[in-house]
Amino acid sequence: MKKLRLTLIAFAALTLQAQTPDLTGTWQGTLTLPNGKGLRTVIVIAKDDSLYKSTFYNIDQGGSLKATSTKLNGGTVTIDLSSAGIAYEGKLSADNNSIAGTFSQGGGNLPLLLVRSTPATAWEIPAPAPPRKKMAADADPSFEVATIKPNNSGANMMQGLTVDGRNFATRASSLEDLIAFAFNVNKKQIVGAPDWVDNDRFDLAAVPDIEGDPSVDQLRTMVRKLVVERFKLTFHYEKRDLAAFVLTVGKNGEKLTPAQNNLPLPNIGFGGGKTGMSMNAMSASLADFTSVLQMLVFDRPVVDQTGITGRYDIHFFFTPDESLFNGHPPKMPALGEGVEPAPSFFDSLQQTLGLKLEAKKTPVDVLVIDHVEKPSSN
Image 1 (cartoon, rainbow, N blue to C red):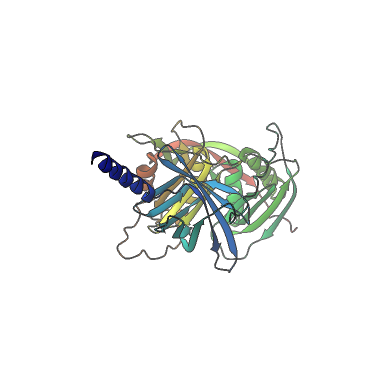
Image 2: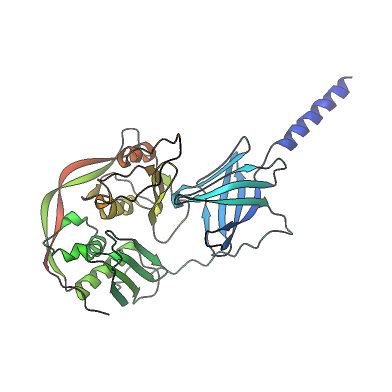
């Protein structure tokens, strides 16, 4: 009788173990975009001790991203790529071989059914591209080719600043935007400029004259040379006391997440979400972070006094107001019933990242424009 009882206990344990869901393996599915185009997506999930680790692969466009977190709770699967503003949530099937869920990015939601692949059904994951060659650290690059065209879209703020390989581009940027990026200053630090410097909008496309991917500082160098040459800019510096925001570590310490993906340049942008607007940064230093804040978000300089080095993935939701984005915050869709709005930018920054922005008057360099001209047509 004792032997039979032990056998039954062992059988029950094996049955329980067999019924315990396990996400490890390779999952794949096709994400159908609004334009009807399908993007094959593969997610490889492994386990490190008791924690799941996921990597997303875009089969049709190339590239991969490591997830910030992967969780299984009561049959609900959540995979978070917060630094890219991406999330996936779905229900695991009873046989543990499919996940019916939703892929979310930038406030948009698309259905995505993932199926556990087998050796016979698995899509081939493209080999990772070889590391891109970086521009020599001591290089002093210029733009070999640069076109500047008027943008008459009616945009009231810059719509994009991107680097794709060696191709640098901005859309609907003012000369003030270009100066702010090139000299890493806030617009309040640019004085003596005629009105058109802020009001006229341009699309810029340029290619460096030196091989390799430039660093952020090298990009700034090239744009500095461009605005001096093409806009005939001359200026001098002065030191003035200005209202600014100072970034420090909150009293409970920072809550930063080290970068999961080693990108050659930081990737920083804004998107939408269920509770408000999101700020997303991948492989960004706090200097990169504050540079974007003072260029796009705030009407005053942002000074980093955290003393924190390294590169991080940053993601948080906030409710925009008229004090942000030069008084033109993006219009957000109405929140769902029962959904609480995200905190303000300042509160969310402190709650999520443990960082504090405080208004202070502090001495900063001011760029005083002596002469500037509209660019000649290309």
